Length: 264
Image (cartoon, rainbow, N blue to C red):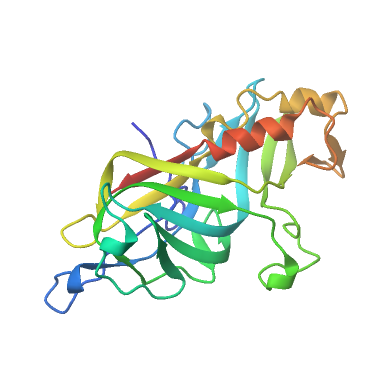
């Protein structure tokens, strides 16, 4: 069973879709008012991790705690329920939501705080058709300063994901920073689907589970060998600085396959 950790609002849970109701408590016109949140979760935190922490361990057993994280998203797509296509729907889509063939698309870009689960611009009160949804694809992309969500001097500029936190190295607490650039989809699936909208669930969580991100990676060994940059007491896992046997390529693939979709 997945154990989701909650920090103030959502700890590491992710995409939340809330059903909009009419004055009588029923869903208005069969439409769902959707609030989307993309965030992190840790289903299997390492032994000794603090309750509520977003924690993971590398191949050597070193525990890392993520304290802040951001990601840049180009768009989000929801597969329509089996057998449905856009032409079958008697539904008026409103920006940024549109429909093509058998997919609903929420056009971005969006800047997500992966700890709070919030985004800029906000993804509250979106309208989607009611139904059973079993797959959501999130397109990660480079954060382009010209689009106005990230400043040129910010860490995320021209990158896709930035995270930072702490880890214990030989009894000494050290900082780490993760900076990655990739332009690909992450898939979030729920076997059997989750009902959203009229007579359906109020929430759906789209989570990136960090538990296995580092488990096959010798992160601290690479640091000790000098193959990962250590600057001013901070370990930097960075596309442009690492010489550690394609560690970033492996990590990107793991991140893309760590998505989980659940309803409540």
